Structures are given as C-alpha cells and as structure tokens.
Length: 391
Image (cartoon, rainbow, N blue to C red):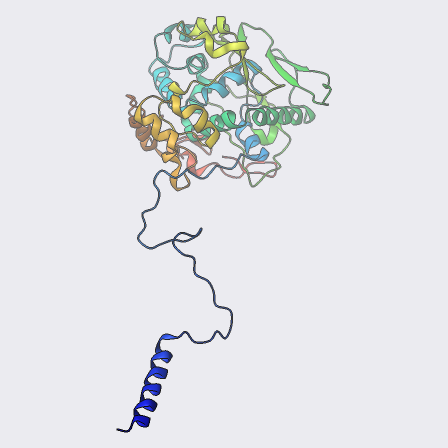
C-alpha cells in the first residue's frame, strides 16, 4: 500500500471514530434532568423518611359546628360548659356511662357522692348526675369526640355557634323564660355582640331540655351538614307538646362547677365547687378561673389537629400517648378514633386497649335510629324537617 493510500485510510478511520463519540447537534431545546442532589430529584430505591408529619386537618366550618352543637345549644350555660369539657375525654365518657348504667337508681347529687372514687376527669364525673345527657353522649361517641375536637381546636367558634342558634330559637319564638329556666339577653357589647344566657329558674334544680333542632330553630339551613339529633329518651322525658320538652328536674346543684366564657371562648371553673365532685381536683388546672384540658384523661385517643397534638400530645403518658401525639391514629384520613362506634363497640375496644383501660366495649350496640334503639349512628336519621337532614 502506497504512503498516500495509508494516509487517506487513516483519515477515514479517524472520521468514523469521531462520529461514534461526538454528540449530534441540538435541533431543539433538550429537557434537563435533575441530578440526585437537586431539589425534586427522586432516586429510585431510596428509602422514604419515617414519621413524616400528618396532614393538618382543616378547621371545622361554621355550619359543621352548628350541626354539632344543635342538640345541646339550649342547655343551661353551666351544664353546656361541662358537656363541652367532658367531650374532650370520650373514652372516659363511655366508662362513666357504663358505670351509671349499672346503678340506675343513682341520680343528681346522690350520683355525685357515689362517683367520688372513680379516676375520671371532674367534668365526666359531673355528668353522672344527668343520665339523660350522659346516655346519648355514650350512644353517639363519634359525635362526642368530634365535639371535643372542635372545642379543643376552635373554642370561640363553638360558643359563637351556640349563640347563633340561641338567637334563631328566640326569633322562632321557642326560647323564652318559664318555670324551668331563665333566658337573659345581655345588651350588645362594644363589638355589637349580643349574648343570650340560659340559667336554671331554681339553682338547686336542673332541667335538661330536649327538642328537634329543625323545629326549635325554625328550620335547618344547611342540608349539606345535617344536624345531630336524638329523640327524647322515654325514661327521662314524658310526652310533651310544643317545641321543647323538659322532663323531670334533677336536684343536682352539687354537680355544677363550670360556666361558659362567652367573650373569649372556653369555660370558667370554680375550683371549690369542682372539689365537691372530685376531692383530688388539681386547682392548678383552673388558674385564673379558666378551664384547662388535662391530657392524662384523654387515655390515648388521638388529637385531631396538629396544634392540639403539639399542645397536649407530649403530656399523654406512655407509648400509647406518644402514638396519639404522632398522629398515627389519624393516618389514612381517619377523623377520629371512634369511627363506626354507632354500629358496635369494636372501635372503642381498640381505643380502650390502646389507652390501657379495662373498658370491654363502648356503649351499647347502636344509637337511636328512627326513634327506636338499634339503627346505629353511622346510618344517621332520615331526612329532617325544615330543609335539612338529621343524624
């Protein structure tokens, strides 16, 4: 082969080698790929971080809260405040209801004396004086827990919802003073707010009203948020006419220790009266006369929102409390630890085990359905009157 031919062959080989290694010229924009170190990169097979924060639960809407408080908004102020406190301890409510069911003859002040030795929160103990209140709270444990969650996370919104409903009941002509109660309308404050208070006509005798919210409030405006409701329990309420029934008054002054703080949200507590119910009541929990939630009585039931978990979760004793603090019970969209309670006691059993309690089941097998026992809370009630359903 001649030198000239060798030179040409070498040039051809070099050109071919260049074609194999050089990138082709760009004919348009080439999308960039993030490197493993760049934000947004997701390398394959990389382990995911553990114990990620749970999504924050959205605050309850005003209409949702009105639906929750509809069956209790017309309770006397003091009793209402204690129902709201007790709702933050749903597992103890179930335990107290079972305790009272085993002692059907105990009512009013006699029940308060008998419950002294139990370990529950003072607000829960106070409700054994009112079986017509404690019984539906146990039958509807999912409602009880949602009410407690709302009260812990949005106390001012809860009390504002009560005031709106009271004013509607007044406008409908269904809330007024009588032999059982005194309705007091305070003049508007500097902010234009009018407060409607309800007090017992006789401080020694407490009447618990019962009513259909769609009737007493002059209709229900939120069909997308059906109001909560239970028909009057025959054991406590004889047949009545009109929008509200009062049943039998209970001598239960010893059970009263709280009041609503309408201006600021929350509740006032008289620690001297609280010690009449629970001799071991810690007066530090009522500093400045304001009620404070005690996480020890939560018994491992998870808190709904991040703020409550941060505030109270670390106070829950033991690993069970820590699970609630981490929000494990709210994973997968669970809004509360008692879903499905209306149809049976399994959910309460799980929470009871988690809270290291001796409770074997939560309440009775179901709530009230269509005016009769059975039916379970999950199925709710048929369509209510006045433009909204009920449950």
